[in-house]
Amino acid sequence: MKELNDLLDKLKSNGYKITEQRKAILKALVSNNNNLITVEKLLSESKKNYHKTNMTTIYRNIEILEKLDLIHKVINEEGTSLYKLSCSINHHHHHIICLKCGKTEAIDFCPLKDIEQLLNDKDFCLTDHKFELYGYCKECKNSENKKD
Ligand SMILES: [Zn+2]
Ligand SMILES: [Zn+2]
Ligand SMILES: [Zn+2]
Image (cartoon, rainbow, N blue to C red):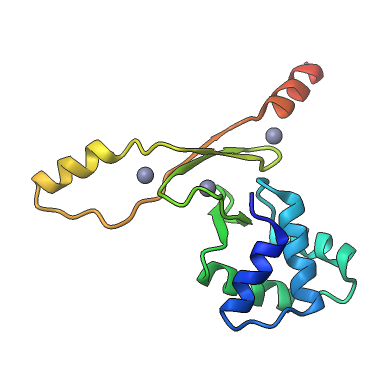
């Protein structure tokens, strides 16, 4: 997980000013840790830190954070964009995502290495791929069982 101060430093060193709204958004992302959240949730959480935060600022900051590789975006099956801070793992990796609460865990393993080799044999160069795993976290699995 990234700390707020690291994020602020990174923004500052890239020439971005630290405004109250920006800080409120970053704080909300840090406190959500590895949970994926929607922009609506990010807005309501950010507002708790600074009540003047608005949707336009949320979108503008997401754009900046994406450009600096500080945020990870996942589009769920309904087509909704979900966000969380990038993991501290700096190399290529994957995630398991809880379908119910959006909690994620990093999977420090790429199953597509063999496919890459296969494609090389076919004179195709693989430049990018996205691969996300979905399921239920322990808490959500337990709460499902209780309902039955
Ligand atoms: Zn990650
Ligand atoms: Zn869950
Ligand atoms: Zn991979």
